[in-house]
Image 1 (cartoon, rainbow, N blue to C red):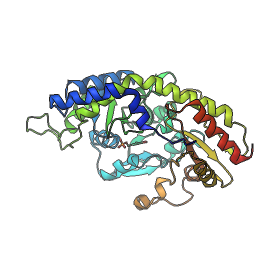
Image 2 (image 1 turned 90 degrees about the vertical axis):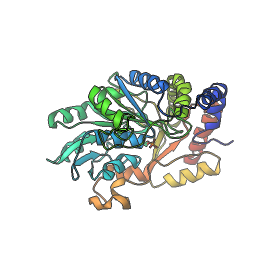
Image 3 (image 1 turned 90 degrees about the horizontal axis):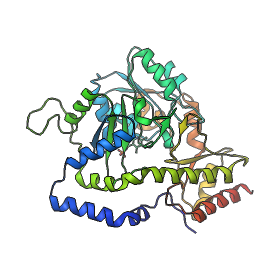
Image 4 (image 1 turned 120 degrees about the vertical axis):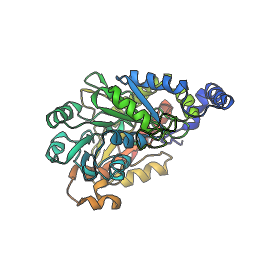
Amino acid sequence: MKVSMADLPAQYAALKSEIDAAVLDVLATGMFGLTPATADLENQIARMSGVRFGIALNSGTDALLLSLMALDLKPGDEVITTPFTFVATAETIALLGLTPVFADIDPLTYNLDPVDTARKITPRTKAIIPVHLFGQMADMTALTAISRAHNLPLIGDAAQAIGCYHHGSEVAKWSLFSTLSFFPTKNLGAAGDGGMVLTDDEELAEKLRYLRFHGSKGTYRYKYVGLCSRLDAIQTAVLQVKLPCIAAWNESRRQNAAYYDSALQGIRGLTIPYTAPENVHTYHQYTLRVTGGRRDDLKAFLAEHGVGSGIYYPGSLHLEEAYLTYGGKPGDLPHSETATGEVLSIPIMPELKPEHREYVAVTVREFFGV
Ligand SMILES: *Cc1c(COP(=O)(O)O)cnc(C)c1O
């Protein structure tokens, strides 16, 4: 049997007639940029995420970049974030001439540790970017308290967290800006790149709409220096077809996770994912922890048996070559550094059939001899 981490052809096959019709319709109208459908999609996703405004963009990376641009920060200003994330979170800080300051993670949730975050605040700190990693929100209760005490805006990187809740409130309620990615393998994926900023602030939403199109409103007059970052109409059409499925897809991911939780608990040298009681997890990834230096052996064993797996992430960003200029040293962020050597994500996609997940669990157990 073969089980891969993602099966996008299977997702497409299930919705083929609707997606084909929607895409062909865009081709027939010849309107490829922002259309009334963009506003519909923005409103639907904003509402389900707990805020009033969505600004559709051409990637999750641009969603982070434009959120930071909207804050008018100055070169040298510091932005605290996690080193245990996809690079875009730190990259966008660095690209704007701002200084990424990495705080360590909570070893249970892999999310930004509020205690270390507070410790890293200086007079130059101007924002905090927690990432809601793997489909579980960061400790936004503690981070909100820090944000209020120091008057620091929060940008929640929710690329992996559409549909998440913390203390019963939707993901976007917890940050000034929240950023989504519609990269094809995310829980809600386009047929190419896409992203969105979510906010409840009307003025900033307006500013983001300028920024996504050259700082202009399409009249060849320019209020800000902006980017070209529209979500194109074909991606919008595909996302409109898929959006009604997101709740059921997230529920399938949770069911797959519950199956693995019971099949893989109590194995020596293996730790199943932890969900904080105040969070609703959407399992963008189901991430195991393999101790005793055996993670790479398990990955190889799974591959030999036809089971895909992924290491998210193999390096802590403070030690990556591109980010060493910010002064990171081995040992600075021990929980993040340890996690990079121990994490292994196994297939959790909604398209997983019961026989697939059983085979994955049996193969993991076989590796541990149980
Ligand atoms: C995917 C991802 C991004 C970037 O999104 P793109 O749409 O690929 O640009 C940013 N942050 C995190 C945590 C992600 O997983």
